[in-house]
Length: 159
Image 1 (spheres, rainbow, N blue to C red):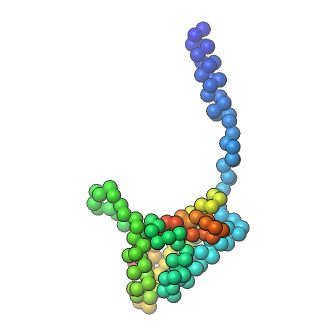
Image 2: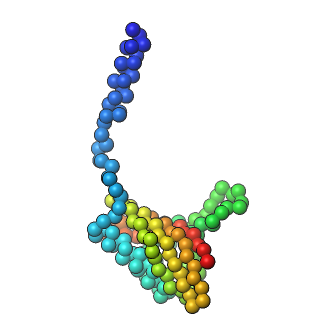
């Protein structure tokens, strides 16, 4: 009898947790659509334009600020140092805006969004007169004051 009573109490205490719906339902998809998607695509178009024309001011207008996590990610880590510094915008800025000119394009673009937070993943291609390279990039964007801003960027790279 004690076991039966304990089982009934256990089921009754767990049942509300199992049956209770979320206050806000989980969306069926996080694909960005409509005006927000168009605005994010415009950020991406402006990004490639700024990089390809070496327009640093235009590029920096896309960033939340210059202290955001912004870094190339090594394809493998040989060292065992658990600390990883991801604030490398200055290195990127010098390479892009003071280095050899190149043209950049994006393809295979995926944009996910939940309210004012968006995540973009894509393949980028860089071309100079003599070389081509590519990489995979992820960006986190936050909508601030009605404008989408890049809040973080990580990328790989291949020749």
